[in-house]
Amino acid sequence: MKTLTIAVLAGAVSLGLWSLAAQEVPDVDPVVSNSIPARAAGHSYTVSNVVANTACLAERGNPISSRSARFDAGADCDAVWPGLSKARTWTSNGDGTVVVADAQGEAILTVVDGDGLAYEAVEPADAMITMISAD
Image (cartoon, rainbow, N blue to C red):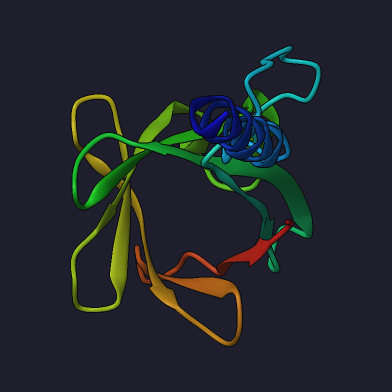
């Protein structure tokens, strides 16, 4: 009789522990459906030339090094600044300036962190260009 009582108690404890374990919520959703696209690591900017009264949309994309990221500007950006559509990299110099360069590494614009989420061109000196966050 003692053995039967111990077996019944052990069964009850096991059943109780099993029911507690079944109620746990997993830390990670095990179903991946790709129904919601992942947000790109990029950041969009409205690039404006106040002298020419033109604007376009450009994007700083995924990082390619600790200081650089991909940069993409459409063909319409050439109306904002000549050659801007050829820009491929966004490189932070660590001093508050950023160089937007072509595929060969030649600087097209050098911008400095301005007010809020904006950048202002400092090189070439005659570039009256601003980049304002569009996100």
